[in-house]
Structures are given as structure tokens and as C-alpha cells.
Amino acid sequence: MNETMVCAVGNVATQPVFREAVTGPSARFRIAVTARHWDREKSVWVDGHTSFYTVWAGRRLAANVSASLSVGDPVIVQGRLKVRSELREGQQTWTSADIDAVAIGHDLARGTSAFRRASRPEPGTGAGAGTGAEAGAEISPEPNWEIPAEGSSEASTAPPPEVSAEGPPEPSADASAKPAQRKRREPVPAG
Image (cartoon, rainbow, N blue to C red; front, side, top):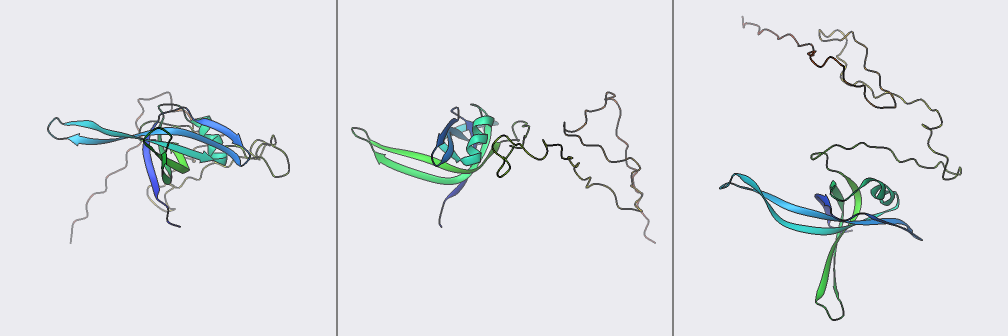
């Protein structure tokens, strides 16, 4: 199928509106996308034209959008672009640019975000059942991918950091402590 997929980076312009319908939940909001360019003469960034798009989200994405986004949040939206034109009674032709969202997230180039996985009800147990993690299942820590190979001179004797359900450990109180520096390898003279 030929569809125009777009990725829009901008700010939430209207508060998301959540609706529960017979076909499932849906949410919509407007996103403002402003082009910027570098003015060489003034040595400053200059704002260009601002385009507004209506973003439509369905199902779980709709519920997460309504719980996560607020006006002014920097977001990235990926989805199918739909441009519609209508002739309204007594008015000029009305054109709308909509994005049927596939993915929506905060723009981490402009701030931080704390992700919380949405709980999904277990099949056949009802809506309030929760997830396995809530039922006391053990949370496995993130693997330490940066452990040096055995026999390497850079092998660390320190155990990997513990990861808890609360998140990463707090930084140490001694902020002046410097991390251990690696020894420089001396060049080997050609012989």
C-alpha cells in the first residue's frame, strides 16, 4: 500500500483529548512544527514558518498519550500523513493535515523523560489484575555489557552495580572523587 509516512518534531499545541468509542479508545492533539535555519549574516538561529498537524492515536497509544503529554511538551510523532480538503457551506475550501500516529514520544534532545511501562491486564483475569512484576516476580538487573574479556589487563575486580526496581543508584556523596584513569600504552619502537 502506498502511504506517506512522516516523522514530525515539534511541540504539543493543544491538550490531548481522549475519547472512549465503540471501536476503541482514541486521542487527538495538535502539534506545532517550526522550521529553523541558521542566519549567517546575524549568526543566530531564525524561526521559519510554523505548521500545525492534528495527531490521531488509537487504542493503547491513545491512553498513553492522554496520560503522558501536556501542552508545550517537545515530541516526536511518526505516522501516516493524511491531507483532506472539504468545501464547507458558505466558506472557502478547508484543508486539514492529519497524522495517524504509529509512535509518539518525548524529544529527548530537549529534555528528560521518565518511562513507566503501562500495565496490561492478564487474559481472562479482568482489568485490575496487574502485571507479573506486581505479583512479586523477581526483576532481573540489566546485564553489564561492558565487562572486559577474561585475561585482559583492564579486567575489573569490582562487582557489577546492583540494579533495583527503584532505578539506578544515587551518585556518591563524594562528588570530588575522580574516576580511575587508564594507563597510557607506550608506543612500541619499530625494530
